[in-house]
Length: 410
Image 1 (tube, helix red, strand yellow):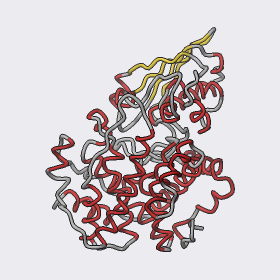
Image 2 (cartoon, rainbow, N blue to C red):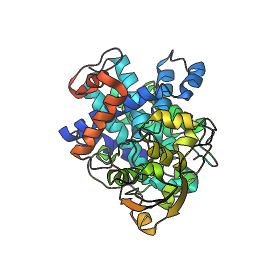
Image 3 (cartoon, rainbow, N blue to C red):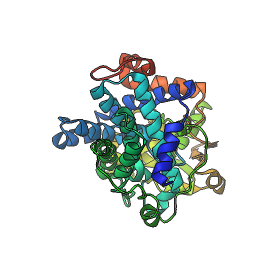
Image 4 (cartoon, helix red, strand yellow):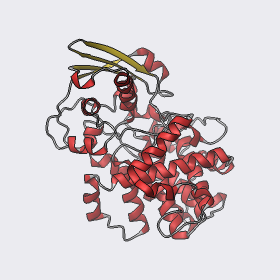
């Protein structure tokens, strides 16, 4: 069996338990919330000039891009992929056009997540960062293709063709010296490409279904090694409670622990962040980031936001990306072998805060929102959605038992 066929077979056989459906509903709610916030991102105005949303694929590409623009969307840490931004906007837009039941939408999301995450894990997941690949861009189209194939009710052969067609233009280089708009545009293009691939398969277009066997193995430097894990990968996905790069989430959680202890973060002069080496690759120390993308990956901006009490606010990172100096404590990045040993299963952080009469530290093994999702973290997801969507957040709860409307499930 080819790698593509194995991915599709696994995804189609994942049990859709009540718990998985509930998690999928939370994934949709969270993605809709961060997309709503993303429409206020400076990138949205640029996108509107070239993606006015006149077609289904334009809408999917723009929405997927903006769902990731604030770095506020969900992440599978070990796989190194952002499944919410890749799969949910595609499923929502196509599902609305087809007027599918909400339960079918949830099934499409679960199946799409599974193909994307299993493919990324099979080829090394977040370990691909070290080789210059961004797994979300490399495998993202395969996830949206699987979701679209589910909504289009394609058979197993057509679905395998859709995933293979989505994989054919394999690529997605990780940013080198800086995160620019291209980092986010790649994700949007991948989401739209996957839906296009499902339509191509439905029309009878073909490709090799062994693209992930020999060619991808040669390009990515390793053969696929299936995880062998039972159940849905969706249960392993982490939510974000800060709009910045995932490696900084644990650091901000650790700063929050210190704040709760009564440490006056606003009086700190120096902050040392210890992160896993792999996670530190995504983080910078720019005090004058040139763009919101650079600001979202800046440890200086994140720490200054915590000191100012604005670390949860997307506008803080957007405003910081204007090239003006950020006022805040000096920040130094360190490494801790103990954190490396637990990465990528856990992306932890140790924070040490210094100042006049201050020398405190805190370690967080992983950021809040990591799998398995606790009741406390589920409540945080709901609060985040209400903060970003307002009363409309209620509209998106219980979508698995509802029918689609023209623009949303209610």
